[in-house]
Image (cartoon, rainbow over all chains, first blue to last red; front, side):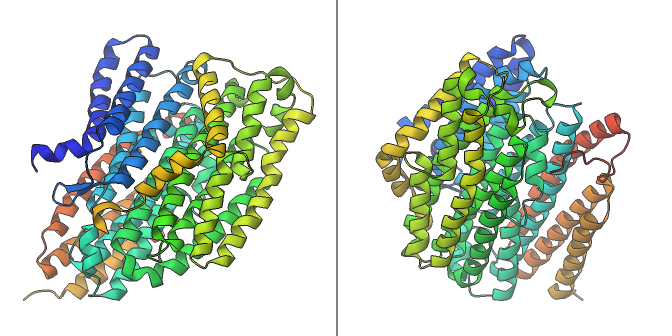
Length: 478
Length: 101
């Protein structure tokens, strides 16, 4: 390692060091709003470093870190998610009586884990990043203790998350046994020996990461965790943890195991189809908005998963990866916005969480209802929102790869999803009611910005699409 | 006399399956967590065996990472479970199940 190695990961270093410093600074800060501001300043600093000092794609730390455009794009997504999460959380925490200073350092730690995940060039780094991402999230899920739902959510998340890490580690052990290396590029070069061992290892890695992104049949924890955890935390982890999981999935399977594609492509097709179908069907019967959005997030994991089998064909791979990157970007705005609205409507003691509680929202808060309607349209995938563009490109990637069946499943399940997304819109606009909502500057700003982005990038997706296309070359590895 | 690597891998496979079964079958959160640790240590055993068979040190390095991360996991996990035990006087996962839908 040389000092020059540090430059490509400067954004990650800023976030990690800022989190450590914030732990100490927080002891001397009595108004937790100040902690939130300092944390946001750190993320903004990292984001500006990321944008203003691009640097050329390179491999550092002896192949452990691959700082390419793919990693840069995803790091930007994580930092934006973190900023929005802080803006949503501050008022929510004080309103729910769980305002503790550790919240923001924990948030920064998990963001640094996600950033490390996107930079990983070695399975060791994938594992460490996954744990750095997960451990603070377990604590955040239980942040509203001693509220029983929050504790239960943290316990379920923790037990199943640790279970998933077990699969991942054993999978990595078998991949190491088959190839003699844990370096992604090294694995790709060593595919000859012990194909059976490698195959089992790859499947176990797929299971471990499938848990993280909540793919069916490894999704069981998602509804319970999302329902029980504080809404502001879920707003963050539904986007961040998923993007982190996909950052690793795409990198590991496309960069390290391309020659094994014949083995994992059919599996990922099945996973994607199952995830889309079950997520959307189970969401229909949910009366609780948090559970409904949890199943919705499972369904969207299925859509992003479609990129993986498509990327098994080298010719389609860049298009598929850029479609997945754009989807994550689109999902960031539409989903975080929807959760921010949930935060605005939620009341103490778990009130305001049923879909029926949204009745009459269009009269009392027309702006909020309009924003929610926009997010629902975007999650359904209807124009003129960014969700439509995202789905279009991911379906096109599947068609380019000749996976007509998968694309059909995607379209049909999108139609099914319209039922439960538009039900929220119907309840907001057609039924009368007196919802109590929270109106606070930062929360409103988050909802406004995410709604604006959902709309604007739906009409003018060009710049981000170009950025995603430039980021889809998995750097030095391929 | 050296033990063939296949034997060690077979043992680690058995330990891993035992760990998986433990998580799936047992209802006490602490025992489930212990089973997860068993899965991680099965992976450690496999790493060591492969590292010796292939004379590649990175496998042994990985074990240190797994041990360190497992320790961090224990710290977080036991704190969560103690906190739940305080409020519910039980860590049976079937009793801690108010979230359904």
